[in-house]
Length: 181
Image 1 (spheres, rainbow, N blue to C red):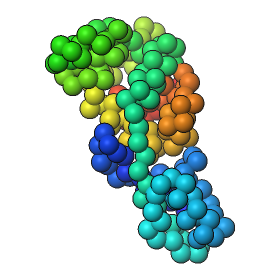
Image 2 (image 1 turned 180 degrees about the vertical axis):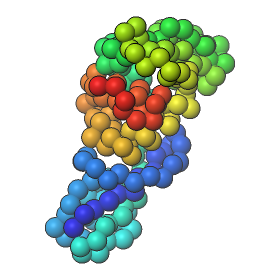
Image 3 (image 1 turned 135 degrees about the vertical axis):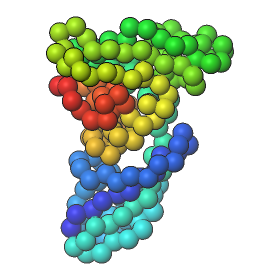
Image 4 (image 1 turned 30 degrees about the vertical axis):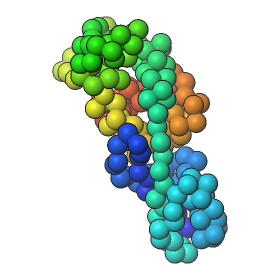
């Protein structure tokens, strides 16, 4: 039996998507009861389940701004430095938010702020233009990561992320998929 979970993010935004790969919240279960148990562990609700068919679960999976910031830090401290650099910043709209920024990438965490990025020297993908990394891109990147790379998403959620997790996250934010590495 193949089991698929449908997940909604909260409170930062509400977006629905399906995870169909490895991860602690996706798997094959021997029984409907086992799928229900996993749904309960996720504070979710087993919506449909039929033996030999897909089980659909709705779960709320909160992602904190601290978890997002940790992945940005991991990316800029080495995870993405082989292909990406932050060369400038656009400060957040609110001066109080701007006062919290210590590193350029942190500007993206706040409304109106952005981290200006470009490909690192030595990367030969000359035609690729990179958009600024913004708060909106971060939110989209979390969704892409959860959908396409649930193993890395689980690391983000469990605070087990490392340089690789940070790199996958930033690529999801900027490119919509893993292109480098």
